[in-house]
Image 1: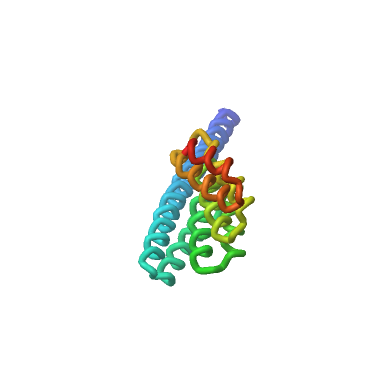
Image 2: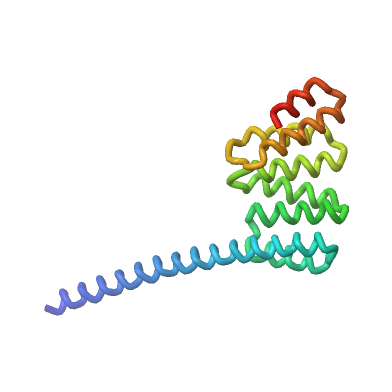
Length: 169
């Protein structure tokens, strides 16, 4: 009977170890979800503070968001906007491109990056991103993307294309 008792204890130990392994995975997943939610809230707060011209508080909220979820596209998109607003174009572009790379739904990120490029007078590039956003069937603001594409086509001196995009808007 001794060998069967050892076998039983091994089974209990293995079962316990597997249970702990899977429970730990669940806790990490729950923790990660919490961090992403918290990061998105802090990113939104950071942008709200920026709109109130509280730049230091804005940056602190965005840094906290980045710490909470360093790979989250929304956080990088918000940082892109922040750096564009504060005149740090290279950092803005870096964060926008990372957001594009990581985003599951890219329409809004493409559109925001297009707006950034437009503000940098990089009209040809911005037009491409507006059109990517406009053609994304999951993107809600398709009309706005086409309207921005129309304005950009005008800047490029292509009135025919501007009218075409204006009609689509």
